[in-house]
Structures are given as structure tokens and as C-alpha cells.
Amino acid sequence: MNHISDFHLQEYIDNLLNENERLIVSTHIHECSRCSERYHIYLKFNHAIKRIPLVNVSTGFTDNVMATIGVKDTPSFAWKVLTNLAPLVMATIILLIIAGALYISGAWNNTEFSHAAGITKSSYQVVSTWISQGTHQLNTWLLKIFPFHFTNNGIMLTVFLLCFFSAIGLMDKYLFANLMKRKQP
Amino acid sequence: MSSSEHEIIEQILSGNRLLYSQLVEEYKNRSMTLAMRILKNREEAEEAVQDAFVRAYNALSKFERRSKFSTWLYRIIYNVCLSKLNKRQGEQLFVREQEYDDAFDELSLSSVPSLDYETKELITIIQSSIDELPPKYGTILSLFYFQELSYEEISEVTRLPLGTVKTHLFRARARLIQRLTQEYAVETIESL
Ligand SMILES: [Zn+2]
Image 1 (cartoon, each protein chain N blue to C red):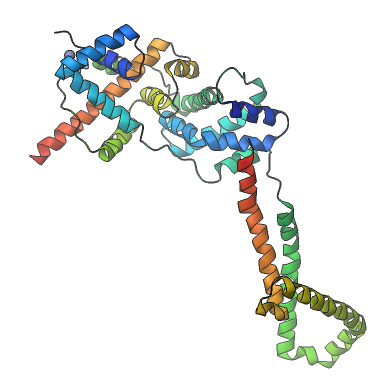
Image 2: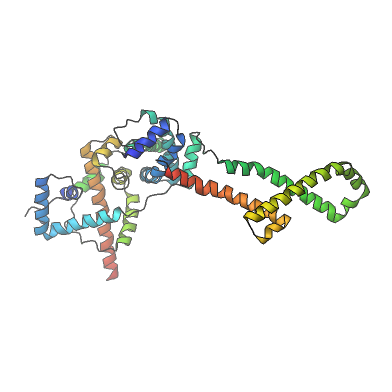
């Protein structure tokens, strides 16, 4: 009895035979247990090999490619504002730490220091009045929109605002930007 | 090639260059799988894929719209990998391995037992067996199963005659199945 060669069995599975050849192979497979078994080996193999996972590239691969070809993702407005504010926030924190250290050590009440500070005191008072008035206005306004108890406190309000803008910035960069990209054709 | 890919390429060429990242995202892992089959080294493969994506971007205006973007891209990846392979130690993908090939002409699955592996186990064994295949068979096998190209497209990517593609694919599969059945025979004996 002539059997179907492995080569033709593979061609049969890959759907490369013409109608006449297909008929011959399928009839033979039904009648011959030996060819039927080999056919099923190939089928099982095909099924298994298609389930082998792909080899993944490292994270950041696409960004590297885009950077190499000189195309950069333009950051969103909110993110730009946030990143530009970052040095200012850091500078403020550092100054506050220095001032705090001076105050705790008692150097703040030292006569020389007080004298030097007194020169700018009058102009500082004007500015600080504006700031406190502005903060009060903002606080009243915020309390109407966000009626949380903690926004009543000046420090907590600052913390709240920082968290609020950081959250918007992060959501914009990682969530909204991705959603927008996906919508593009 | 899908019309949306056509549109993306049109848009990239008309200035929306950021969209290229979508094509990179779509094909990066398939491309990596192909490069790994040829180079068999993760670092080199990733370098080759990145290089190929950059080349493809720079040559995008030369891409002929009547062919599939994937086939065109894989051709570039294939070429980059081959030149890396040549640089390595003058290695070539398609050297004539007379003895090896002749052994396969004798191949017959007539006496092999059927595969009783659980599919998960089968997948693991096939995976490690593919890694042991000579690169020329691994490459054709990858292009067929993982990049999902037709025989004609594989011939286009590798510039090999259609008959050679068919023979390589036949031998690659036959060798893998032979390996599987050998493993099966060993395991059956051990379990006795
Ligand atoms: Zn038969």
C-alpha cells in the first residue's frame, strides 16, 4: 500500500494542495491508520507550536527607538507646568528648612539677624498681607467647591493643592495621554 | 496589509512622526522572536531589532504600498541579523550542511509512537527543541509560525526559492517531531 509522504501531509495541513490532491489525501487518511496517526502528530505539533509565546523586547524599547530617530512625545501642558514648578517647590522647601533650623537654634532672634531682616521687613509685610489675603480668598473659594474639613487649615490646604496638581499631572501623562493615543487611527 | 496600517504610514510620512511608535509597538515582539531565532543571543537580537526599526523608519518613503508592511519590515530585520551573523565569525545562515540535510532525506515518521504529551509539556519541549535547531531552519519556522507569513512571503523575505522554503520548513518540522518522539520514547522507557 502506498502511503502519503510526510512532505505531502504537511502541505495538506498547510492547505497548499489543490482540490484533487486534497481529496486523495483526506480519503487515504480515513482509510489508513498509519497515515492517520502521522497526520494527527502533525496536527498536534501545529497546535502546540502556535501557542509558544513570543520573545519580548525589554521595557522602554519603543521609547529608545523613538529617541534614536529623534521623535519625542511632546509633554502635555499640565505636565509642563508641573515639571517647571518642581524647582520652585524644591527651592521653597530648602529655604523653609534653613529658616526652620535658624528659628529652632535661636539664631532667628539674634540681634544682628533681626536687624538685617528688619530692613526688608516692611516690604515683606506688604507682600505677606497680599499672600494671606489671597490664600484666604482661595481657601473660601475652595471650601465652596471642596467642602472638606482639612482645607480649612493653611498647611493642609497647601498639601491638598500640591497633591491635587500632582494627581492631575500624573493622570494626564499616564492615563489621558494613552487614551488619546489609542483613539488615533 | 491592513488599511489602518496604510493610513498610519501615510500620516507618518505627512509629518505625524509620533505614530511610528504604534508600528513599533505592534511588531516589536514578533520582530524580536525572529531575531532571536537567527542570532540566538538576546542582547544582539534586541540591538538588531532596534537598528532595523530605525532603518525602516528612515526608508519608510521607499516602502511600496502594494506589499505588506510586516513582510517589508521582516526583510529589513532579516538582513540586519544576517550581517550581524556574518560579522560575528564569518558565520552564514545558509551554508550547505550536507550530512545533516541528507540525514533528513531519509526521515520517516512511520515507526514513531503518537505524541501523548500534555499540550503544556509539549510546548516547553518544542520551545527548547527550536532553540537547538540550526538557525536556517529556526528562521524559516519562525517566519511561518510566529511572523505568520505565507511560503511566498517567506521567499520574499529570505530571497530563497519557494522550493527551498518548502524543503526547509518540512525539515524543520520533521526534525522537531523526531526530537519530540525521541524524548517520548526515553520518558516511556524511564517510566517503566
Ligand atoms: Zn497510509
